[in-house]
Length: 117
Image 1 (cartoon, rainbow, N blue to C red):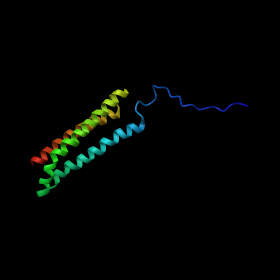
Image 2: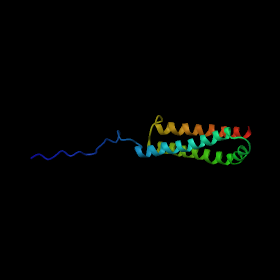
Image 3: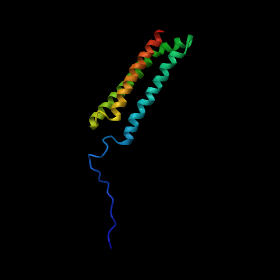
Image 4: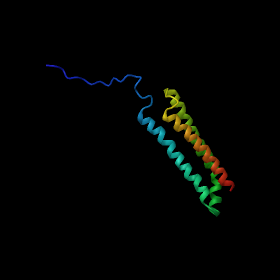
C-alpha cells in the first residue's frame, strides 16, 4: 500500500512576499483613513462662513500641525519598514507613503490659505 502524498508548505524564500498581506493591508489602510479625515477637515474650512469659520480657524492650526505631522511621520515609518523588509522602490507601500506625504503637505497649505481668506 502506498503512503499518501504529503503536501508541504515549502515556498522558496525568493517567491515569498517580503511584507505579509495582512500587514500590508493595515499599513495601506491607516493613512487612507487619516488623509480622508484631513481632506474633509480642510474642505470644511473652505465651506463654512461667519462665526463657524472663526471657530474653525482658531483650532485649525493645531489640527493642521498634529494631523499633518502625524500623517508624514506615519508614512516615513512605513517607508523605513519597507526599506528594512527589503521591498523595491516600486512597491505599493513606497508609492502610498510618498503620495500621503504629498497630500498632507498640500492639505496643510490649503488649511493655511483658508485661515487667511
